[in-house]
Length: 103
Image (cartoon, rainbow, N blue to C red):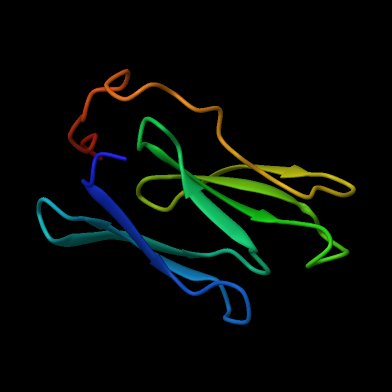
């Protein structure tokens, strides 16, 4: 949402490898794999990234997986069948553009 962080990945028929980049410093922050991910989306605040495996594209292992902007997996939510996964929208300007948190 702010253009600071970038996730490059291969989804659909590709393996789901993702690389997370800090575009202001041009540095790679982390890598992770999201197997069978169908959709992906940044949170409105730009600090979290969600991938999802959805029905009917995938009939098994449906759910959402949440990552930090560095690519660390935070949480996985399995569901029986889900057809759409979205973040709750926020008005522009609600979340400030914050720099990366020091490790």
